[in-house]
Image (cartoon, rainbow, N blue to C red; front, side, top):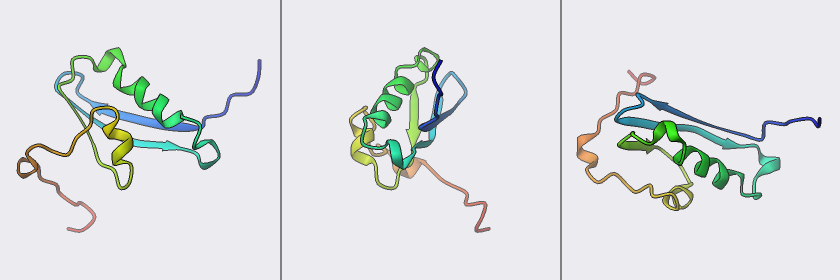
Length: 89
């Protein structure tokens, strides 16, 4: 059997009921441009364990168009969300 190389990563933090947060989606530079990020998002968003989750959220610096292709949109009510920056207390 051939050698396997991990070319990317994606993590969903969820309560498996109402909320999920998509975090740390990353493809190694040598493997970018091969459709792996699209494949990874397809696998994540269609995963049966997430079928009951009502809201899946994420934050991105520069991949808005990629995520929009999978149904992600800007927050409909951003005034309802808050953050606590634990590094800048």
